[in-house]
Image (cartoon, rainbow, N blue to C red):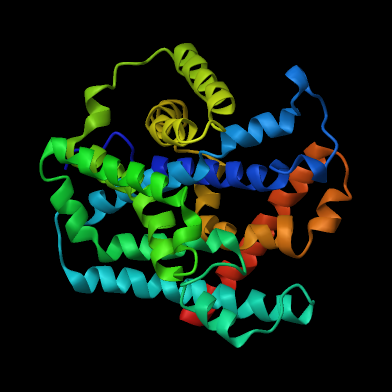
Length: 326
């Protein structure tokens, strides 16, 4: 069987890089929480880097679609997808049943039965905003056969792109839909983010990366990656244009990373904790331990401690979850 340009191991490593970017983003997106090391051009260096790190979700989403197509291809078997959904929900509910009661006991969350039920079944994610991705991924698994229809013909990807544009436009009128939670959630999450998921499937099906696999000079790859990340800081905050640019820049950034990384790395070993870190890291950076994290003052120390605690917490939750599954 012909090996894909992005191997399974490389995909895991790039996802882990995206998770590290996510932690950085959530540590430093709010400049009022810390004192910057330096402010080139009047902007804190941490804010500049965190703006570029905002692409982390896009990287994860593209690779999810890319990897899913490699795994199941044109298979429309509902049972297989239902098993995946079941496993995702079990993992999510395990994390939920640990941290939400702790949050209530610590006084971080109010005890509200309706809110608990809505979050438990992923209709809302206002206990931990990062949990929205679980809703998105489950929906994409459910509509996977429809995604296959989109990528049957090469030019059909335009349909997915225009659904993203439509979603971005509709979110600008969020107040119209905000009272109807499910409709707003579908627009906000699925319409916008489905494009990168479907695009990942598209690149996997037609082996697009293989056709452009000619950039071999590592210095040029590093320079290209640097320019892409700097451009993200400059353009990312421009309404609509910045959002579209962030989506489209995911592809060349993944391409560059896949050329630079090697599979024999500690990131590959740590990648087994990606899901747990995604689900739990903001309890450290935002919800439970933010006062402690930002009391450390030095932003390098803040990030290192946040990463270490996130990895430790992920190790604990993954170990416990594995023991319970057995």
